[in-house]
Image (cartoon, rainbow, N blue to C red; front, side, top):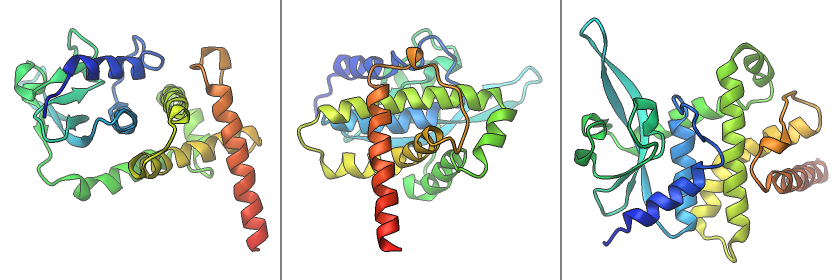
Length: 230
């Protein structure tokens, strides 16, 4: 398979330019990589979500393994690391092989495969959007506030791109619903006053109002169906 690395780099930059900017994306590699996985899929670029460790030498001489996530383009040895800047890489995004970069060559991929860890890691991520726990955690952690804004920006960009598609394939439909279903729930509860969180719309990517409209339509339809089934 011939891989146009420049095209993949451009797509990745397009996807992250309205969200990360110059922020340190530490702790955000899972949602970034997973949403980028779906975004690239809408462009007919198939990839796999990879989990691994980044071994960091500590001042005391010990090595600390930091969990990390990135993508690998299917049937190739090309990876896409959209959050590599957290490890002080000169460029914020890396597209290439593991061995061709001084940082990625130290990565230790998880050999157990997606099925062994994805459900657990995904549940840890989505737990913060559970209605009963979210407001308390949000008040306690500045990281959660930054993380939520960042993820809502990524969700807005992906929602905007999916709306451009003339038809949605099974891959996009499944992964979009799997991931953004929880974002939809959070935004619906936010608009209905069930949860409280300040969002400055002027700082959100183009299409955020459209996402909110989609969320309201979705949520109202869900309630209607529930009431009809009761």
